[in-house]
Length: 346
Ligand code: GDD
Ligand code: MG
Image 1 (tube, rainbow, N blue to C red):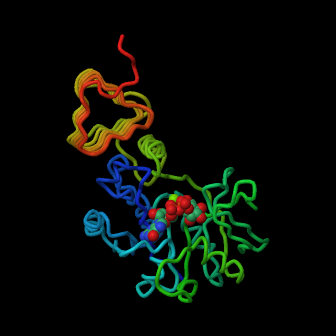
Image 2 (tube, protein in one colour):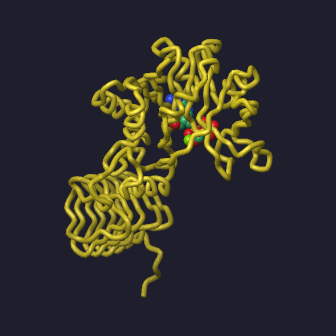
Image 3 (cartoon, protein in one colour):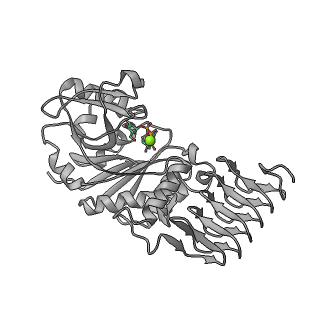
């Protein structure tokens, strides 16, 4: 049976990407100008998936609606309360085919999806996409038997108790049969559905190889943007590793940079391996290195913004500031000149 539907779980709060996520839901944060989830949707389209459900919460619903309305074949499944990972899928079951894909919405694994779909056995109630990692601590650990069925699924066991190095990639071929036995309400794939299917002998695992794209933390967001700009993914190839859509009267340096439309960089300023979002102004002789400057931010002159700092939308940073060490500036905040600095006066 061919698969043409996917459900993306995109309900998380994106706390680790605050304050960008105060303005835009995490899944829609722009990677060199493209909403992150578009990378996944493009990959799905290339594998013949033409109907995509996005499971989201009520917060930032307007942003999600705008996104869904402007994409063909994308529909929202909205939860009044968080239903965990399997609950939203169970709730949407009436609209889903006998077999469909489910994907965690916070990472994209650029892989041979067609090969993975072809490897899914019709007899399995679910087929997990798996990857090999060294450190399993952030993942669901999967033990396979010789026939490729899952013997055990253990969500985030303590590192010294992990029974394998094969982990859940957050990509599943799912069947209605796997979920129809559960009632409505919150339900976890990782803690309930998968362990039960494994015990039944109905859970298959297929190891896939591929590049992870992840925007879960400021460092990862910057790495992901850098990888995309450096042309390392086939899902989106920007024109240049230094993508200047706004006005740059200073310079860009390092391996990559993105200065979005309507942003401006004043003379003497340097933008290096950083993201300057639409409408932001980087003042003269200011250095932005390995940092994220939010929408409509104004940074005064002679400042340094570095160390995976994020400045929230509409904030004003006075001249002679030094923002470092992952500091987060709230949306709309106003910093007096030199108010934040790590350098003692001369
Ligand atoms: N709609 C909705 N509602 N989505 C949710 C909810 C919810 O209540 N809770 C979590 N999600 C979404 C998250 O946004 C994310 O895309 C996905 O479900 C997984 O949740 P995470 O909270 O990111 O889980 P994790 O990263 O700790 O672990 C998961 O991913 C690993 C691979 O990255 C698990 O699936 C692990 O087994 C897996 O190895
Ligand atoms: Mg996650």
